[in-house]
Image (cartoon, rainbow, N blue to C red; front, side, top):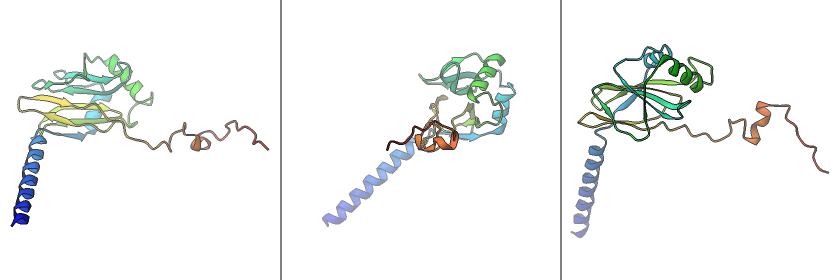
Length: 174
């Protein structure tokens, strides 16, 4: 009898925990990668009524977002900015290493939990999360750079010959 009661208690606890987790994720939206959004940034034809923010350096931001006018951004890591074509050109040149369009910088639509578009995203980092509260307050998490294991880096000593085969190599001691 005690085992049956313990089993029911464990099942009840799991059901309660699952319901709590489901409730905490109901405000999360999604990030839809979009060539159209990337093109808007690249052609400097952004929606004029959006509110724009950046995170990271003011000369080479980690990401730039635009939030639709009916929403409010809640964050201490995003800085408001007045977007000008000149500023956007400098940022894009710095974000792409001067290579321009199609260089691994992501455009995306920021979508709310019901599928509504709450903003746009442009960043060399493809990962973020968006949360929208019932009172239309948006939280966009700063981008998370992708982890690398170091093996593809020219600064990893084991790969130097892949990037510069004429590196100085000191003579081996005898």
